[in-house]
Image 1 (cartoon, rainbow, N blue to C red):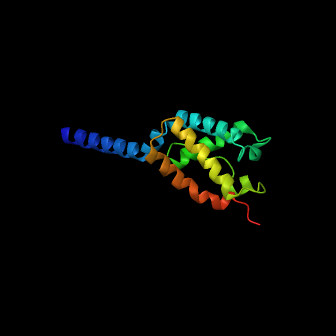
Image 2 (image 1 turned 45 degrees about the vertical axis):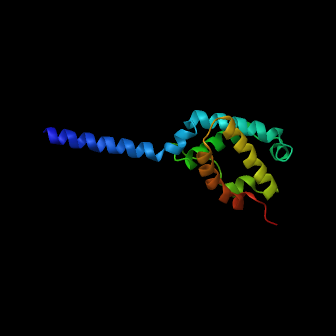
Image 3 (image 1 turned 90 degrees about the vertical axis):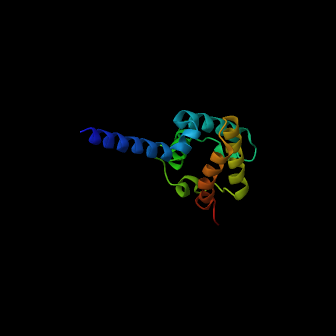
Length: 140
């Protein structure tokens, strides 16, 4: 009977370690609370940045922030579900070019720095965001 208890404990321990390893990046960002602060700061930066502010005129601020938090959470292997539209549809007709996309990324980096996200963790998120440019840009 004792061996069964040890085996069960070992399985639970391994499952716990595996789950923690899977969400390690999410935890480096401070989980949902940290992501919310980062997105709030990013949005402040974007609105103060003359390269990006015009893209957010009359935008639904609360909804955008909520969807970005959801999206980042999913990208960071957190326990979230993204409920927004796909990137192509969301940014359709906004005439977003590479310079504007890069400016938003710079504003995000500043927010991550402000919130103490480790550099290597920032790079892992940015690597997941970079391919999204194909869906965000306007092709004419």
